[in-house]
Image (cartoon, rainbow, N blue to C red; front, side, top):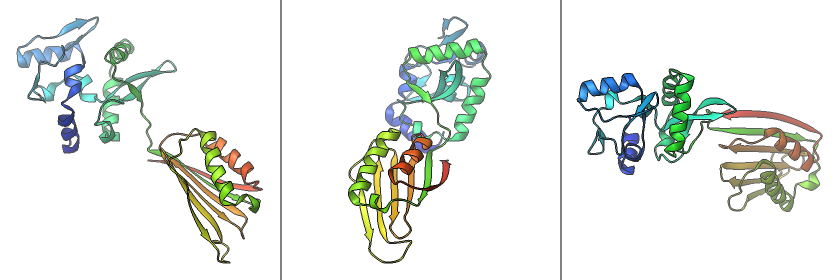
Length: 254
């Protein structure tokens, strides 16, 4: 466990160890009993659970850390079911969830993949019972749409219209605006500078526009750590600025 993760766990009072009932497989139970000489497990169907709070928690530290159950090892990862398939999830109530890296998630997936389908179902139902609020893990940090529009109607390049664009594009792709847009005007006669640049923060990042009068072009970047429908954003933007041509690139930010 890295220092940052340990610090957050201690700050929250290791609530997962106090309010959770982790799944314990029969072999794990045997190993823990052999080492601790304590049989504190409760049988639940084909597996066992630990009572609350965990009897192996001493001074907010796990006394069986090296042989702790797999369910404890993978937390705040867990299992969810989507479209009838089991997938990795991240607990939305764990304050340490933002420190979980890809390697931790891969290790959790390996542990879960060792389970039978019936064991996965048991773990899924146990997670629901304990109200861990797992949500599907997004492997990427975010998504960015880079959109160049050419042959645009420069009459759509006013501040008022760009402000309207921010309002409507956010509605179109389900984003929440934050504050008011910031504008910058360039009055030179340099083709790649003359025009209006604008940026609007959204709850999940930002939208940036450069509308250049002489070139009759609009350059748009939509970046969000929340997934959005890029095709819908492209279609709306092209129609809004009455563009004749579009150049598109969608990037998954890692």
